[in-house]
Length: 66
Image 1 (cartoon, rainbow, N blue to C red):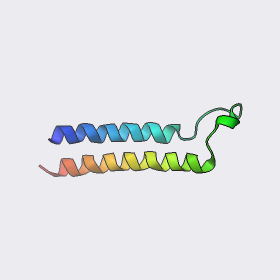
Image 2: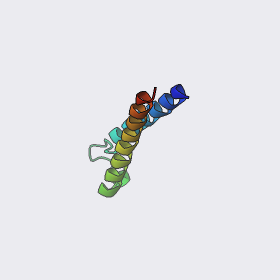
Image 3: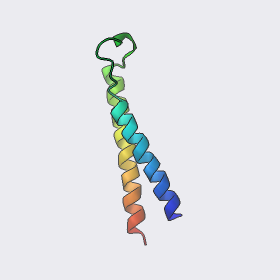
Image 4: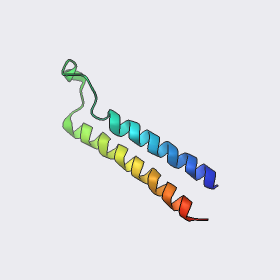
């Protein structure tokens, strides 16, 4: 059970990292008609950070239980 929780927590951390890193996008102003609004960028960034934080909390709690 402990290993399953560690795997799920790792998936949360990786997905959160990818989501937070990709929130800003990178179009250099050439694709502004397809770009996210400021609100969407902030929302995706915060959701990504929360996923990373929740994965880290699961890791910490899972390791403290022996």
